Image (cartoon, rainbow, N blue to C red; front, side, top):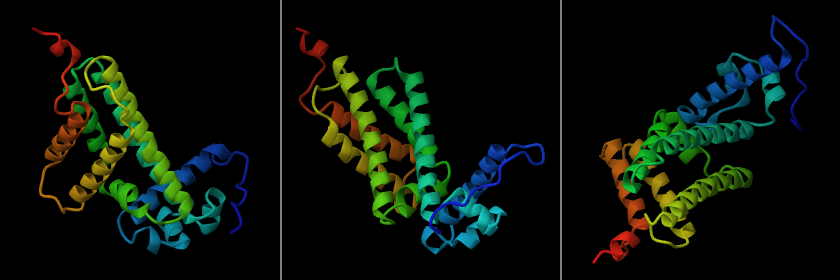
Length: 224
């Protein structure tokens, strides 16, 4: 298909065209979450199989998407948006806590959201890899967004004297790689640990970045 087909307009069954379109899109995404995130996976799913799972027609698929890759891209963004919202809500609630407690609250929120559905883990950490240059660019862009969030919070902590003043971009990028790898291995059953143990390890890593050996808060340095 060269592009999406034009969807019907006007009201039908008491619902507007926009409402019907939103429902169709949701049904395709729900079906894709199951097929891409479980069995058979993105690379073995066809438009016909996805349409059948959604209870819709292939024509309706092409009214919403151009390709299956577009569906995977939408799912990947959706999973990241949910995780980001969970972190921002936790940040708002934990904003006045000491640094160690604040970091723990943020990563518990992130890990709880990402691991709430194993299919979302597979979409985020497995199926998205190596599909196309476009999806790789999207994946890296979303990762950069997480890096920006960590750098912003680290910079704010440093300004309050809670963390060492430095450029955190390289360290934050490396840390995101640790987060992705550790959560993927845990979800795949390759790591014998509880989610709480995984989160605790990530918190220790990040606190080690924010407060490296030899650094002490300015208030502690002024004490006699």
